[in-house]
Image 1: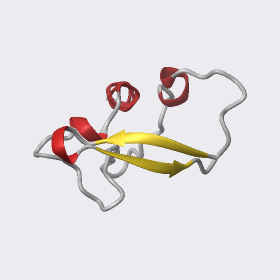
Image 2: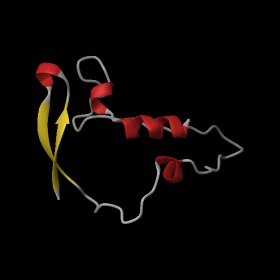
Image 3: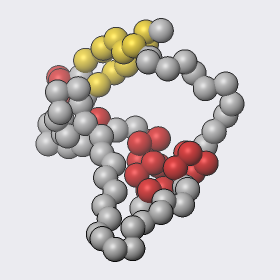
Image 4: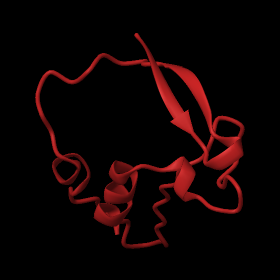
Length: 82
C-alpha cells in the first residue's frame, strides 16, 4: 500500500510516496501500551537505550530543525521511553 506524505517545511517541503511494509494493525494500541514496558537492565555492565528519528538519507534535521522529521506520535514515543 502506498501513501503520500508531506516532508519538510517552506521551499524544501515535498510530497513523497511511501510504501507501508506491514499492514495496518487490526487492534488499537496506544504508544504507552507499546513502549511503556519493563526493560531488563544488566546489573554487571552499563546499559544504553537509543531512539531517534532520521530521514532516509540519514539526516536528523531539515533546515537546522528536527521537527520536520518527526510527528506528534514520534514525540510521544520519545517521551514514553524516557
